[in-house]
Length: 118
Length: 112
Image 1: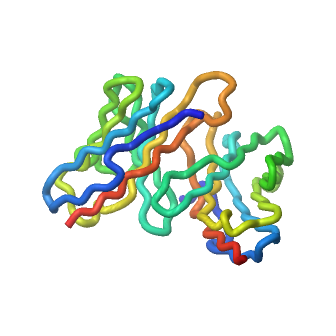
Image 2: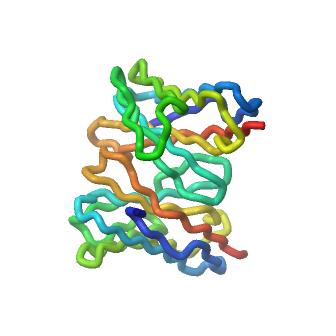
Image 3: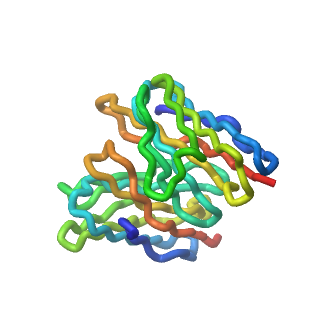
């Protein structure tokens, strides 16, 4: 099946710094990727929809200037948490949409990135 | 407004028993209903999914029951095993390529 990777798997940073998280589709082209945020013992909340070559669409309440999303190629989307603060500490998960016919899944999820802001 | 409501929040089942998790939705435009399994520190993995044109789908020990008129769907795990202990999320999507709305999750603990 299709594989989506994320890098890094976990990151610890100081408050005020910026952190970049990469999401890659390894064996298929993903014109659309989604970024989710998950707090401990809670559900996945969609942050934004990332379309290759265009601006991301953010969900209501998500600060686009704080969570910068770039989808520069068909296999890579990045999420940059700018000026991170402790309240940004969370589990960030991406998913990639697979439009190929005959596939079982339509969205493949990455393994997630644990961000801890000190 | 929560698009998909999931219950129970947690569930304890004895090995060999049946685990049942329920979800309800409001938006009749939803036409794709997947169930995901998530282990701690990992991303969700698709278990099984259903579309509104069928009332039941079975894959191995996992079965989805779908009630379109009631706008409800449920996951049944037959012969539950300790390895099934995880958090389960239901989700719903419009035209299956659109964004997913996730339920709040159910933490399943299967006791040996």
